[in-house]
Amino acid sequence: MPFKIFSYKDLFGSSMDEAIVKRPSKKVSSCSICGTFRRRALDVAALSMQSDILATAHNLDDHLQTFMINLFSGDVGRIGWMYPQPITYQNGLKKIKPLVELYENEIVFYAFHMGIEFQADECPYMNESIRSDFRVFFNDLEKIHPGIKYNCFNSMNKLSKIVKNSDNDKQIKNACLNCGGISTDEICSVCKTVLMLDMNKKKLPN
Ligand code: SF4
Ligand SMILES: [Zn+2]
Image (cartoon, rainbow, N blue to C red; front, side):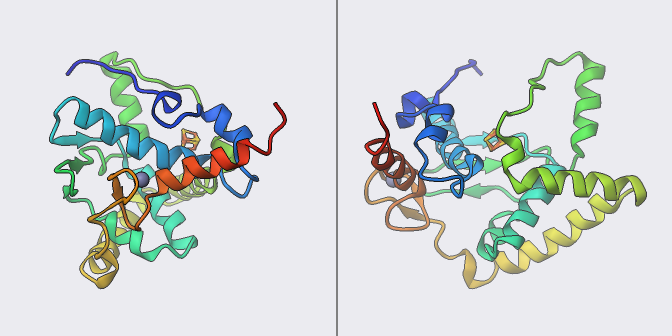
């Protein structure tokens, strides 16, 4: 596949640094803005290349952290979306996570061993998110109880399958009335985020 770079600035009018300045308060976390933009940017990138499958590199650690974030924020419906099987969205794009059963450190060891280059710089905003706390929590647990992450992953899959088969999974196929993108609401989270940043920008001094 050709290597292409897409930017938040080009797609949504704000770089991540600009979005941080424009956000109304720290209650809107960097990661919630970034996650919303990133999911859409990946869709745009995949569709621009006429792809019908989008493979992301989520690993087992990412998945456990997301599960805990959804659980602790009361977002039970999203737990159903996490069930690791290909999902086809209304834009025809199928999303897969081929590395989801592998620990993050196994992937890093493999990349070192095979001489595969990877981006290892930490995001400057990562400590704003509760995700970092869950990363430390699971890594500490795994040191004392080897294999516990994998056990938790199996339990999470069983739970997410139950939620997926329940009513909570019903709205994933909506299209945003403003941009036509994937949405669980009439207006998608991307449009809401762009509007929020634009509105707050007007309050900032020039
Ligand atoms: S840690 Fe950084 S890259 Fe990851 S979602 Fe948060 S802001 Fe985005
Ligand atoms: Zn939209």
